[in-house]
Each structure stands twice: as structure tokens, then as C-alpha cells.
Length: 71
Image 1 (spheres, rainbow, N blue to C red):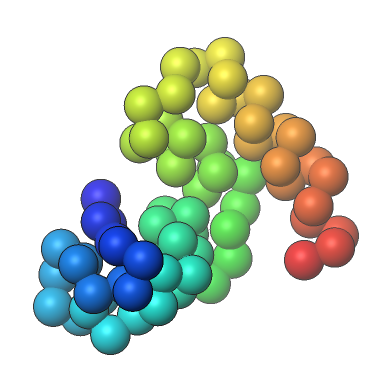
Image 2 (image 1 turned 180 degrees about the vertical axis):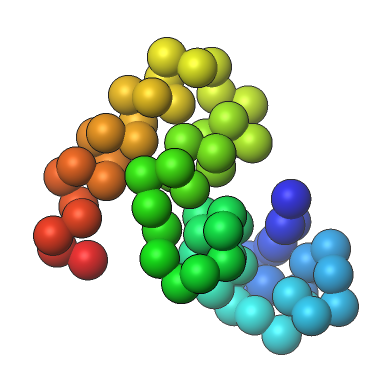
């Protein structure tokens, strides 16, 4: 898991220290590291953050279902 502060300079790995907070957020969300945040990436991200199974499933459909065409 990637930690960051407001400036993005409290990352866990040396390679993440040069990333902005937004870039670290996107990197965390893109669990497969292919440049696309898929519905499965969203599910895994919510589970990694400690959300329960039901909320993770709901979130993956709500987030990817409503924002997929706009982003």
C-alpha cells in the first residue's frame, strides 16, 4: 500500500517519492498497473482499503458504471 502526505513525499518506495499525490492515488487505483482502472481494480482497491465485500461490489459498479464514459 502506498502512503502519501499532502506533498507526496512520504511514499513507501523510493520510486514513488517523485510522484504527486494524484499520481500515487492513480497508481494505487490501477492495481494491475496497465494504465486502465478496470472494474476489478476498483474492487481490489476497495478491499485493500478495508471495505467489506458488499460495499466493494456496490462501489465497483457505481464508480465504473457511472464514470467509465466520462473519464
